[in-house]
Length: 193
Image (tube, rainbow, N blue to C red; front, side, top):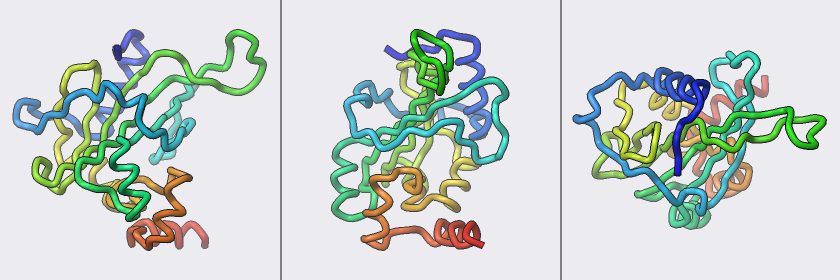
C-alpha cells in the first residue's frame, strides 16, 4: 500500500502540488481512483533528477518511474497516439547513494514519495487530459486547468500533451507514425542550434 512516511516525502508532495498550482476546491474537480495495480503495467522509463526549471533539490536525488496502462500502450504501438482512457503514472522515489554493498552511483529507495497521474478521458476532463497527485491510496481530485503543468505539457509534449520524448521505446514509433507535436519539433530545432 502507498503511504508517505517521511517528512521529506511529504515535502516532495507539497512541492509537486505547488509546482502544478494545485490550490483548489477538491469537491468541484473530477476525481480519479488510485491506480492500485500500476506496478503491473507497462514500464516506460526512469529519470534521475529531471527538472524543467533548471533548479535541483540540493543534497537529494529523485527518480521518476513512468508506467502506462497496457491497453493504451498497445494502442500507441499501433497508431503513435494515446487513446481515450490512457493513464500514465509517474512514481517518485528518493535516490540513495549509501547502503549495503554500493560503493558508487545512486539507487532507488524503497518508499514511494509521490504519485502523479496524467489521465485522458475525453468526456470527463476539460481538454481531454487531467493531472492528479496522490498523497495516499484514496481518490484524488484533478489539478485545475490553470495549473502550469497543463500549459507546459501542451507546449512541449512530444505526442498528445505527453512527454514521449523521454520514453525511449515510444519515440521511434511516434517518429515513424509522424505524430510528433509542432511544439516539440520547435523545441528540438532550437536545441540543435
